[in-house]
Image (cartoon, rainbow, N blue to C red):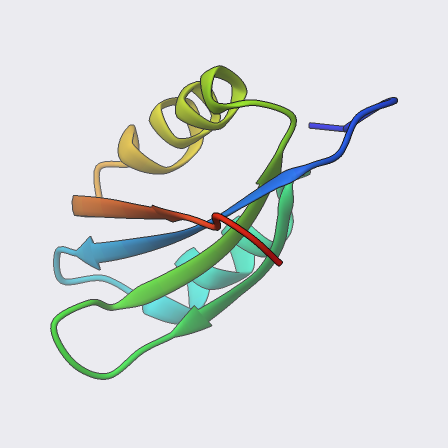
Length: 84
């Protein structure tokens, strides 16, 4: 998910997981191009992934193909950064 020639957009993706190894999920997410970081959380959400994309369509496709499609994932919520 390289962003060539344009400014990147950033989103924070909150992930709720079924019973699984959160560290494995975070490590897998960190290895994906476009994920700048991922964290294990306490509370309602289990993981926070920081994702860069070139546009909303690319972001949506990335989330669907690489995060929501995982069988360990129950729910996601995406927070798109409006200004830096």
